[in-house]
Image (tube, rainbow, N blue to C red; front, side):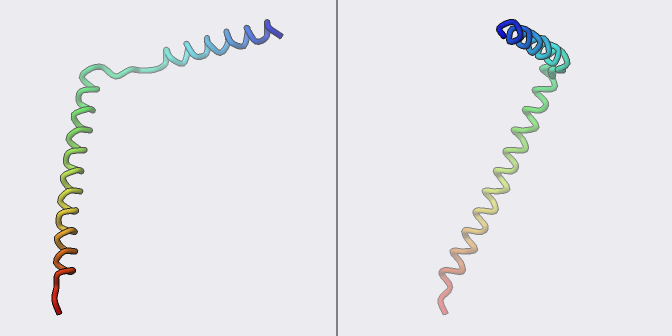
Length: 68
């Protein structure tokens, strides 16, 4: 039983090593470009959400303060 467990662990670790060799890691230039893209998109999305929040809040305040 111990031999089969040991053999399966070795087989698993060899498979893991083989899979890690298939990974293509991005270089520094690609990571920098992708990071800048994420930061810029996040900034503009935050700006759009803030603008919508501002407009909706003033619209609701306007509707609440209407006197008939």
